[in-house]
Amino acid sequence: IQEMEFQNFLLKVGKALSKDEVKALVFLCTDLLDQKPNKVETASELFSCLMKQDHLSPENPQLLTELLVTTEHHALIRDLCLAPRTTTSLISPYRYLLYSLSEEITDDDLREVKFLLNTMIPRRKLGEHITTLEVFLEMERIDLLSESNLNTLETIVKEVCPMLNAKINQFKKRRGKLFTKLLLLNVISVSFDFIFESICHSVYFVLKKLFLTSELRNLQQNEAQRGAAGLGTYPMTSEKRGICLIVNNDNFSNSSQLKKREGTAVDQKCLQSVFQWLGFKVESHHDCDTNEMLSVFKELGKRDHSRFDCVVCCVLSHGVEGSVYGVDGSTVKISDLTDLFNGLNCPSLVGKPKLFFIQACQGNSEQQAVFIESDSSAYSFHWTDAIKAKQGIPNSADFLLGMATVPFHVSFRERTNGTWFIQSLCQNLVQMVPREFDLMSILTKVNADVSKKSDQYGQRKQMPQPAFSLRKKVVFPVPNVPPPSIHKALSNS
Image (cartoon, rainbow, N blue to C red; front, side, top):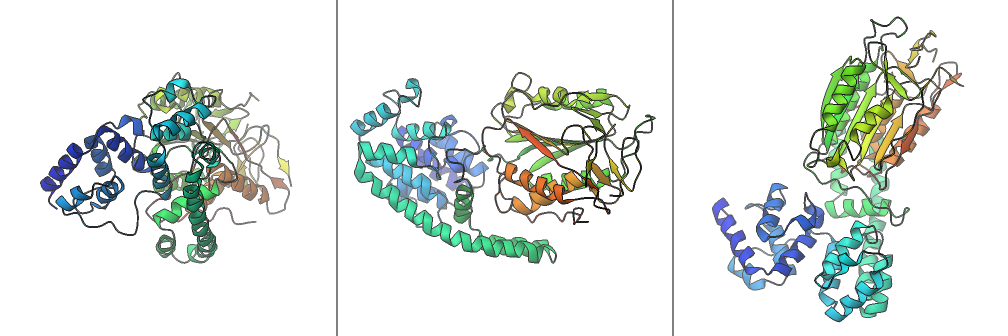
């Protein structure tokens, strides 16, 4: 189909659809859109969004066919000479289930559904003009409904129209069979992780992609969330995930107490590679004094992040409890940096995760248990990033603060391998994002890995500490390119 001809097709389809049918198509495409469904009001807007996201094109009109078949516009399909849809569906079985239920729920049934929900959903969201699909969307928004959490929906359907429970049971049974296959595929996938990682990352990626089709991948992610019933996931649908800011302070020659942070370049390179792979635009700043750090963070906080899913900020420097050093030897409170991204200062990130990773000591105490040099005054073959202030996570919601170590203690850095914390973070992101683990699970693995590290005499230890005010899970989408090869800095001593 030629570009202009395809545009005419879409225009003809849009004219043939009623307003309610457009809403139905938008609902079916909810998981494919790069914006909230209620922002898409016309067929033209819907088709433009889908084309922008490469889900619809003259060369690949399959999704258009799926949508028209679902809304039973068979004559239109015939008039447009569209080919029958393939066996692989772009619309999730979960969306089909909800749409199918909405088609069976009568106006009287819907009034009863709204009555049962009026203690959980604001009444203005349950007005007479609100459709069944809009009710489902509101239930999803407040985490009453998801692919892995159908409990509330089942309870309501049993009360209002029990015959529809057969549809839900059929969906759950089919999902259960697919998940059984996923368990086997995941075992094979994990084996490939260990075997092929050391051989060839590109071969590893191709093999994983053969096993993880888009439908199975979605199911795997939702099943991974079953352990936290009702816990939602932050949307990750933008073309670019967001900005990843890296402040790397290395040269402290102007300070009499603080030494050069040898090995920090390894950390910066790993962070840059991993977050670029995850879809972030990485911006790096080197050797910032305190005023420059505040300026860089303030400028980022003032930007419009509405097109992005989240923001990541990494600081690699010396530190004391609750603060990090600029290369001028002065400190800036971590809370002063994070506050620049709260709801008042950065409204375009409201409701979106704000992720901070701080590689810096939080005191001078060593957790006993590599012959190591300290970035305070102690000497050895490894370094710490220390030289007291109060540490605390931001008061606002949706923040995560990943600290390299617990308060009052040092963190360690190796000249050639980088820091224990950052290297473990990068390694585990590369290994666990393709298996669709959420970020807190990944950071728990980082805690476990770093806690096993010690110096060559087994005397010095380190324990990272994530603190957060997240309200949902952070699950990065699996990139469509092979993961970067990360330096093996965290092999056990």
